[in-house]
Length: 133
Image (cartoon, rainbow, N blue to C red; front, side):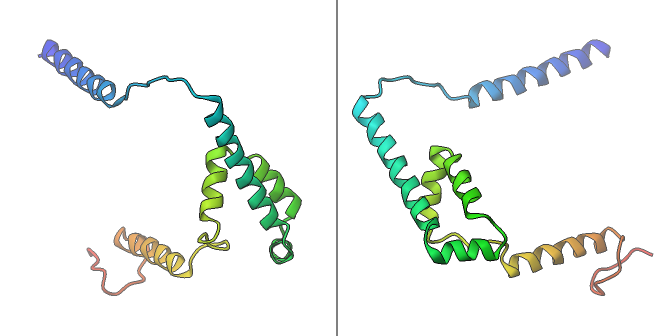
């Protein structure tokens, strides 16, 4: 019985290892031309300039100050973004929320937390939740 447990454990370990090995993709290296490298650098520099110029507008600066955020610290954070983060920020700048969380999302989060605590028996808020007595 003890040997069977070891074989079972070994089989499980091998199965997990096989799953991880099969999921790992193969990396392929290739040459990157100088033109592509500089083109990507220009795109990133342009994106950073667009974001920084948007931050320089009076409306945005006033909103940042109204929220208690120093515009210079925001510019420093933009300078510290990775290329991918910077491009994503520029691409989504017009559609991103101005900050905070959506009121409906916040209400749903509170509702589900209270519902979960009510089901767990920690609270007694909702009359439609059946309690075991």
